[in-house]
Image 1 (cartoon, rainbow, N blue to C red):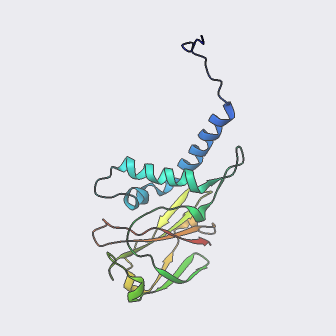
Image 2: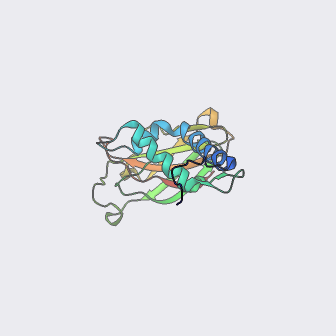
Image 3: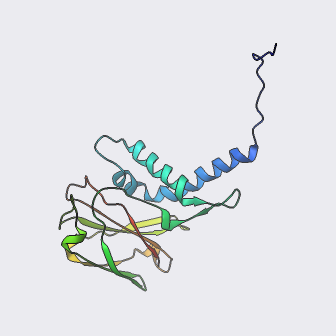
Length: 184
């Protein structure tokens, strides 16, 4: 007979645990400056703040953190800071001149789908990943405005920023999936 009741302690690979911890640390560090946006952009009516942030962490761990231990990298273009049903904008131009960002988009009936409206508010997030600083536009810009110009805050002057764009409805209950516009 074979004795099966004896417990043998499994020897775990310490680098596997370190790799998981490092991935989690990088994801958390990437998302922390975006926290106020994430808890709104990932939330829905039956969702707690922790669940919304957990969904963002899951997406970041599975899609944004790339590479092999110990050489992990963040792929900002794959990040999502909001996820929802509103139609995204059809961006035409995005230009940075010194410390000003100018953005234009087109609005047609074909690119406004169910749930989306003319008065959906446009949010542009400028994110300096290295400096761990993020900022959004203060002035209200609507989908129908077809352009926006924002001045970056002083903490982002002369810093390279990643731009993310998303929308929310007038009640801030529905959001669009965020769009990555690039490094400027």
